[in-house]
Length: 290
Image 1 (cartoon, rainbow, N blue to C red):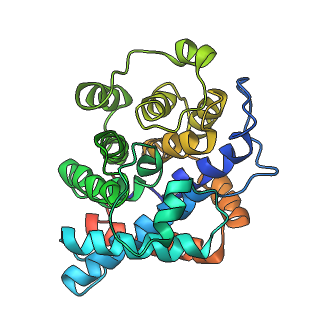
Image 2: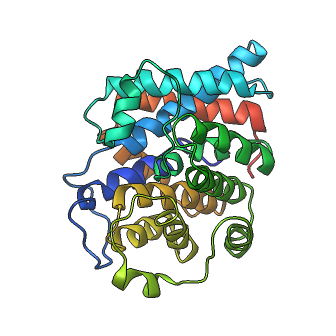
């Protein structure tokens, strides 16, 4: 797998970027976790992880089953996202998503925002093939973000996470994203000066992936994302979700440090779900190191 508590990749990124979301700072600097907290990015990432485990159990009668029924997954996503989301009502949801959490209908609302991408990393981590990662991403996006751009953002991130955990090189990951999802032909130096806060997938996901593409470590990917001065918690969560499995596989993640941050900043409920999800992924994908 991608390491103990592989969901730290997104969660720690979310936490690190949280205090800069409305206070952008384009100077690249070392991570500082003071006055930081988890936001809706982490809450929904946990919800998607829980939904994958629930859907596997409903499909197979056991938590580690390899087949996951699409219909079960959709229903489990709606249930888990609403249950966990409403348990943390002040996590920073957008207006439309907050309304969906409280709605009586299960219908999506056509969003093209990056909420579909910020929560999707469990789909890449739990998948056994690239096609499965992308399919899980489509299902997870469509429960709310059924606009083509919302789906594209989720698929791109899930694919990058899967490729990163599978040992694919950074250059190959970027080529795959460039060929199938977004042009990846601008450097951070070119992006940063004019970049502004943008919550759309099209205007934030390729930039977040570029933060991973130019990184030298997991923490460097987060620092890159924060330095864009945009939707910092979400972009750090996305960049971090790809960087964690990539660098862990290369034995270059200081995971003890970041798991300590997670232990300090996350709830016991979240930590327990993260541990169960790690075991679930190992049972589903095999215990070998990718």
